[in-house]
Amino acid sequence: MTSIHRNIILSSSATRSHATPTPSSPPSPKRLPPHKRNPSKPLPSLPPRPKPPPDSDIEEFFVKGSGPGGQKINKTSSAVQLKHIPTGIVVKSQATRSRSQNRKHARQLLAQRLDHLLNGNQSRAAAVGHVKKKRADSAAKKSRRKYKKLDEDKASAAGAEQEPSHENDREDIPEQQDNATIPAGQADRRNKLQKP
Image (tube, rainbow, N blue to C red; front, side, top):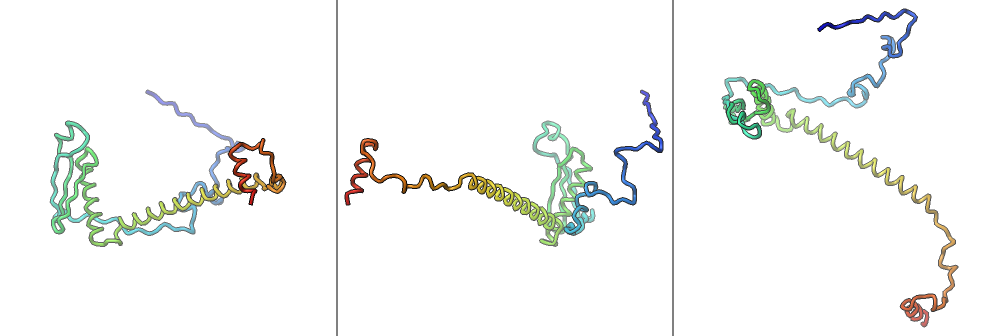
């Protein structure tokens, strides 16, 4: 299989519509990564990722997986179970079919659990959870504001369309009406109200 490569030579007078900006011009805000677009809100600094404990503190077992996967998952021992000897924490990982990737994942899980045990609310997992909660709360607040504004706009538009008119006030309607035009039950009631 051969490939053909063509060089396109542009003359100095030719211009390209998709030319890249010159180094002297500032980059457009659309090209910046999201975290650099709004410098007034810096990203929160998270604690560093926890390091896995030394291998001397870990007992490692390779066990058969469970769950979906059929006969293959029942036959192979690709799931990794780690036990931290000093604390007794046990983690199991069968995220992938690869034993080596499961070993890495299990060590990361164990490091996170130990970090949470030792540092509590100062751990990386707690800080990440706090940031995610703030983002979710902010999104919910933004959504509430949006729909509240839409409801207000809709109500003001409906209020502008239905100006109160004084043409249909009850004062213009005569109090006495013929009983012939009023249904029978209402005529009796009206007569009772007018007697006193």
